[in-house]
Length: 353
Image (cartoon, rainbow, N blue to C red; front, side, top):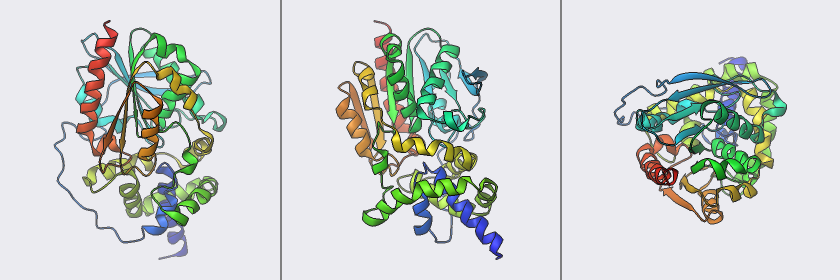
């Protein structure tokens, strides 16, 4: 193998690692150097191929001129509009199983966050969770300007909802009747060790920002290397996105979303996680039906973060899924969907009072 090929493989593995909510999975690239024999586990029946669901497209223009790609699934039933907000380095397709479960029964809205998926690219200065909260407000005002709302966020999507609550608490008083915060956190992300104990965990905290900054200066090399290092990328995705062995189609699907997010976008958003804190925002959710969901083996936003959300939110229900990882919405879709269905029943009762 030539030196250039080796460099592309290393860059690709690191790029995938950074994309895994970065999330410091670069440290995993050091530990996960074994060759790949991808397991082919029994697949769950698919009513539609992963990522193939499409709705009515709407373009939402933000105040700074970024076009957000939004899709709306209409339904006849008069019920709260449910808006789904995806996480870091993913796109709206990550909600495949939740969308499939609610299609035709609920009016649902899915969108790609700025710089992700099919949405337009943001300036680096506005690649912040605070700005994502303002984007969510713009989506609401454009595609759901009236009526009750249910907001569902995964990972950075949950942080987006909390940013909205901090900046615009009146929306949660007047319109939001229920919220689900999945695999997310209200702060203290700098203490996350990515499942690595002791010294390796502390090293990951120190090294990851530098790795992100370095890779961002060579985006072409990283994107080329991602393709060359796809096997290692698969291993990292399986290790950090899921809690245990899952259908390889889910790993491939997640890996594709991560690889589809440019490393420069990953680098633009990454510094904001170190300073992110939204504990005060939780006040706006005190009297709202809230569902907190997390896998007990989540290495990105560990279950302790969800337990803290439950402690700080008197109205919240905590659903811990034993053995599940960060991509719990795919890994344990049936259980997540049941918990969401119960939340929506309570939201219906609230909306009709």
